[in-house]
Length: 209
Image 1 (cartoon, rainbow, N blue to C red):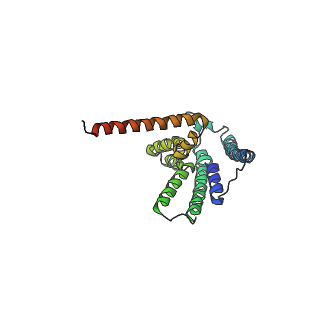
Image 2 (tube, helix red, strand yellow):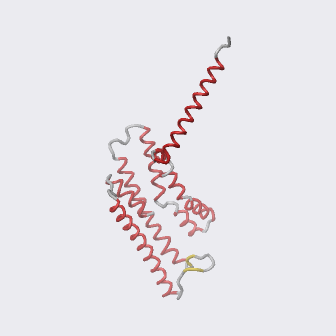
Image 3 (cartoon, rainbow, N blue to C red):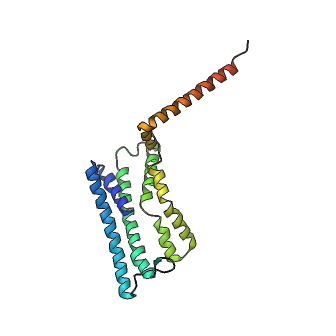
C-alpha cells in the first residue's frame, strides 16, 4: 500500500508519465518490487533475530499461526503499519492539494463532484482499513476485528470497482476486434427492438377503417 500510494503521488503531483515505454515500465515495476521485498525482509529478519536472542524461538507459530509475542506484534506490525499509514495520508493529502490547486478545479459543481469521486477512489489504496486491525489489537473488541476483516478482505473488490469496472474500460473493450462484432450486434438488436416497438404502437393507435 505504501508503494501504490507513493506511485500515485509521484505521478499525479508532477502530472507527467514515468512509464513512457515498456522498458522503463518494467524497470520501475522491478524497483518497486525490490523496495517492497527488502523492507518486508528487513522487518521479518529483525523479528526473528530478536526472538532468537530473547526467547530462543523464531517468534512465529503457535495455535493462531501468528507472532507469539505481543511485543513483536507491537514493534514489528503495529508500529510499522502505523508509520506507513501516516506517510500514506501525507502523500494522499498532497495529491488532493495538487488536484484542488489546478486552475480548472472549482469552476462548477459537477467538476467538484467528479473530484470527490476521484478522491474516494484513490483512498482505497492508502491502507487506512488497517486502523481497525490496530484498534482491535489494542482493545480486543471483536467489532473492530470484524470490520478489519470485512474492509481489508474486500479491498481488492473496492479497487476493482474503482479503477476497472467503469464506462471507459467498457468502451475500450468494445473497440477490441473480438468485441466489436458483439457490440455491433447488440446495438443492431436494440435498434430492431425499438423499431418493432414503434411500429406496433403506431398500428395500435391508428384508427381502424
